[in-house]
Image (cartoon, rainbow, N blue to C red; front, side, top):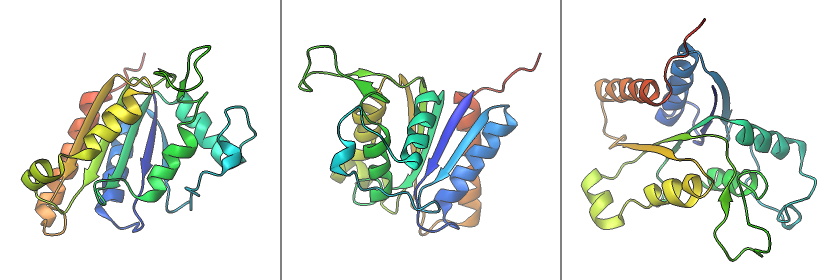
Length: 201
């Protein structure tokens, strides 16, 4: 199975990067093909230019590669911190430019864009790992956990991905090495649960 792993955090030594690398290694150990992108490291341009909005336009080679990978992926693992109840701008821009019409979704014939689109993504499973410095109870009671709605319903659900799992790790800023190790073990267990080991014939 081909799995696209995308991480967005400006610090390559962050716990987010550790989560992404742990997930990628576990996928590979389980026999899956991994496509790995650190959006900050590769300096992905998050700005959607007006020329890219129409469906049938010529994209830059970089964006075209990302679109092809997203379209062919059989699974997704997304990793980013919770910033103001949102992904970092670079991750949001990646969605804007890559989850585009004709790649991630399409409207029915005669629908000018006001209806409900049909998801086109090949993947049936998506996992989102987030980090936060807000206690879980406050996140739920005060902010209603907007990242769950964003990724589950507004992005992956709309684009046809049926199996979704999300885990928020926190509070990271005060966590111990032992706690972070426990969380990384949980990442491995989650990958094992949703992306089973490929049996070799």
